[in-house]
Amino acid sequence: MAWELIKAVYTDKKFIKVTQLRVKNNDVFLLQGLYNTMHDWLGDSGWQAESNTKIEETLFRKVEHASGAKDFRIQWRLKKNINAYIRYLIDIDFNILAIKDVEVIHQGKKIKSNKCDCDINMVIRMEYDYGGEWSKHWLLKHMATVFPKRIYWQEFEQHRKNAYWESYKFMEIIKDFWKMKRWIAEPEKGSFERPLGLPDYEEK
Image 1 (cartoon, rainbow, N blue to C red):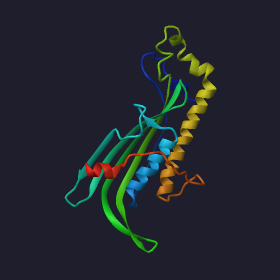
Image 2 (image 1 turned 90 degrees about the vertical axis):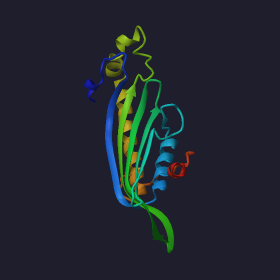
Image 3 (image 1 turned 180 degrees about the horizontal axis):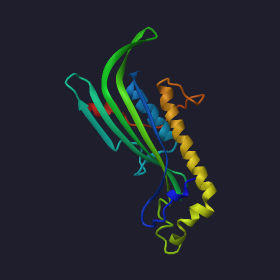
């Protein structure tokens, strides 16, 4: 564990970068299906918006081209509280280029799908003392750096590893949807209540 990343800054939030991931695909797939799969898994796994609300976009931008193709830029900024001291943070950026509606043959039937270049970037961090109970306390602030280094270090390191593996598990869910080579044997199915997603924005 790179303990030099833990800074003795009592008034600022304290973060450790866990990992950064990227997965992309240029193929035919149902964009709404990918959106729903990711949304469900995150919701069922305890992730939520900073405002303690359901998962929602912090940025949604659409560009329409004369050819009829569209580009989307979508951002999710989510958190997962582990305990009163530790929480995980994930920044997800979708860059979806040249999306077009297409029809494909599946089991002898025509179904509507999408053709696009989808690039998903994720940054996963761990924040400690996110409530400021240590850094803002007149006495505890003097132990704010010593506590994670000397007292809580085993639990701290285990939480970091858990965040690491959870982020890779999430990436495998995406790869499984795209039928890419993956490490996890069985995909997970979600049931978390979600908004209408991309079509909802299309109608506005």
